[in-house]
Image (cartoon, rainbow, N blue to C red; front, side, top):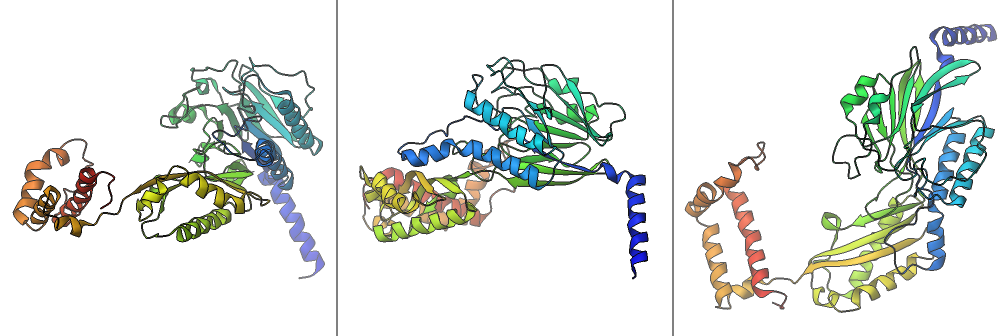
Length: 448
């Protein structure tokens, strides 16, 4: 194909962009809950140098947001509330926030900010000059157009909390701007129930549907999630940096692309500097087969290596729990054992550039149970075990157990309707667990 053909194709593509509105395509970053100035919660025994690095983590996460905006050449940044951690905002946090948005403004990237329950408008604010490209919404709903070369790309509507405790459904006051090519609602709010957060500015999906907006940029919930992908998109980006052990996993922002008035891409990008790992409960480390301290050190060290990889070149804070019927159980119960174990492991990991801090090692192990030895003891426990053995091998007993004793449970409303009553094999499994639990209760914590 010669140069003339390339030129014709280029002109046709340019005409198509003008006719179909492609010249109005844009990108934005949706963030929330920066909590600048927040300390990490629940950390004890950390060296001062490591502690100082943690104090900077929130600000570094904010810098990562700015970097993503610049690298992706976005048109604007949204921040959906709780910029600061407290109503009494620190001066350092306010200056660094202002300076960060000024960096974006210098590159032609605008910022749109609302305040939430942690940093309402009633809180103290330093007298600072904000860049021209920054819009901080007041205590009444306002609408701001976003333009490029005189063309309106979208409208952003938002409101800040006038005080911390807002229980009014603010979403019902949002109205889509007429003839808007793409309408964004910016709000700090609790959507539905079961979010684990206080129900500030509570709303429902039906409320957001009725507003006519294309994208609801929400804040308040610290876990990222796309509640709905379109018509309208309803999105929580979560906080950009986890603040405590219950905020484990990746934290970041959403990068959105709008093409011809439609949301065509929504990508989660991590911004956290320190990542929390909560290996307790079902995620706890099973040490049932571990018999020596050397093996225990090796197993936990291997787990730390795995966490270090999953942290993706970030520092990590880890809460680790040990579980299982462990030969080392009695050792783990010694007064200083767990603290000494943590200190020995910590030496290797805390001094790395991307450090790993063991916040706690918990013991949820139990003594090994030698059922055969108890069966031969000729005591009360042996009699109980003999009864359970007989029950396991008796079809009549299993049938009576299901029909006479368990039927009130699975015939009640508490029993999930999709589950069938337990089969014979499932009843035997239950008896196996009952056997262990009974022996545990009868022998307590005495070695078997």
